[in-house]
Image 1: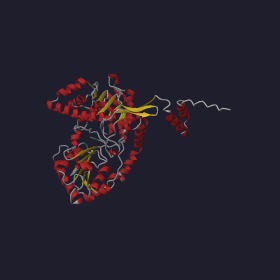
Image 2: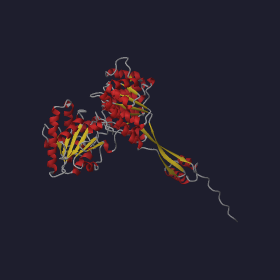
Image 3: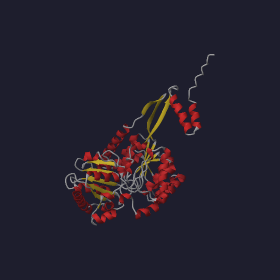
Image 4: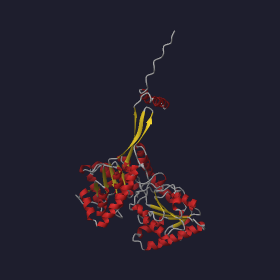
Amino acid sequence: MRSVSSQVVRPHLLSRNQSIAAVRTSCEHLQSARAASAHNARHGPALFASRRAQTARFASSNMPVKLVDSSTIQLGDSETLDTKAMAFAEECLKKVKAEGAAAVATYAARFGELKEGESAMVSKDEMKAAYESLDEGDRLCLDRVAARVKHFAETQRAAIRDAETDIPGGKAGHTVKPVEVAGCYAPGGRYPLPSSVIMTAATARAAGVDTVVVASPKPLPVTLAAAHVSGADHFLRIGGAHAIASLATGAFSGEGVPRADVICGPGNAWVTAAKACAVTHARVGIDMLAGPSEVLVLCDETCDPDMVAADMLAQAEHDVVARPIVVAFTSGQGGKKKAEQTIGSINKALDAQLAVLPTKAVATPACARGFAVACETLDEAIRVSDAVAPEHLEIVCKDYQAVADRMEHYGGLFIGGLAAEVLGDYGIGPNHTLPTSGTARYTGGLCVMDFLRIRTWMRIDDKAASQVAVEDAVRLARIEGLEGHARAAEKRLLPAPPAKKQRV
């Protein structure tokens, strides 16, 4: 579930210094973003280079998603962060870092989140009261969703274990420990998103995090209730860059809300920019920098066009910059021509469903950003999908499991017509916070790993048995010209045996 476009960085996969450098490099690229935008206006990313020309060739003006040729779909560039949002986020973080809760209150009042003198804090008792105020059906729904998300996250956690092995003269291994504090952000703009509260907070809790803090602007009772069933300790009813800044700096530490070690969750351009700044300026970890929501449905002539169209619109209604994509091939006879007919049926279903969709004002321009590709063969369809590396990939075709097994690049995989992406959005188990903008080529979605630290250790008990490693360290240090390293290693060498006296 996404709302803005940006480049994704996964600092937890890197060392601390690499993490900071990675996001700093990303931020440095923003200085030339305006020039890049002008370039893109002329040329466009490789992925979309010929799309307008192909639209004229293949599509009629009233098609919800335009038909493009597969030859235009190549590996593309992810989009950069918004420069205005970055500038605002940097200033906001500096101000909150210097002035604390008072600065947050000023921003919150400016954006209509809090009245003067109103506290940003929501207590655990208030979260519980919000839960109890819901009707029984809503309470049971939240309970079930939270339980499924926790169960899946706990299954992941159980698969990540401490390890130990022999080394010369001793033992080495790693330990797996959670961070102490997680900051979980949930948007509250166009729609309330209690599902995002559960996806972030329940996953952090399953990872074993001691303190879970949720931030979301203008929360409805159902949002507070979602925080309750997820086990949140604190709730801040603020949003945007100032919410991220408060989590990153511990702006409410005086009221018992500690500074976050990791911040996660989707958000708009301002939230995404603030998360980027938090890594470089506040030294906190983040899950990812998320872009617009996207779904790619890979299907053949056996698919139900109405169902495919419904799944595409489920993502299109997220935001006007979301991208619904369909890639069709033919399992039987007919090749590309038959695939074009399948796309025509899907477009017809999109037209009919858009006409009566309450969110069509959002979904219609999103469909205009999407596209369809008719492929001659399954191999061609797989190549196109892997080039896009979509956030959500649905496989709706004959022999769907065999096709799914061949896919390489995606954020979340939904196998078969019954495995609707919306079931993933609403807590069937796996997390719905997933990589976008092609970054699924190197990373996955939010999971317990985002809240865990894998730290290595070593112990030497047998000095004699360690000598081969000590001697190697001495030699390599001198090869690299680091004499201090060599001498430190030499302190661990056994004394040279006394020279034997020669008989005269």
